[in-house]
Length: 94
Image 1 (spheres, rainbow, N blue to C red):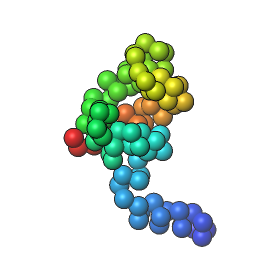
Image 2: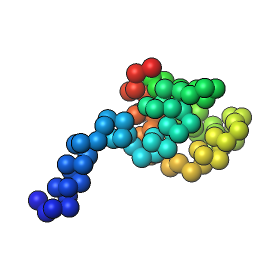
Image 3: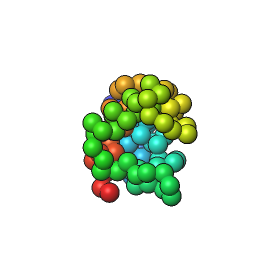
């Protein structure tokens, strides 16, 4: 194995589980808290139903669900990123 892939592989093994979340999911924790546990008035995502989160993100993207900023944020995610994030948060303990 070449040095760079070996270094990257070792870094991935050394990082905490939360840092191994999909990059799109990592963008959510600034408002939704570590592992999506929720922060203040911002609802938690951890342990929520995967299909429900996907539907809500799609509703935000289509301006069918009222929000302060989530409509703009959701439009920046691809369908694959939404699915990966929903799968990640659905697996997190509440």
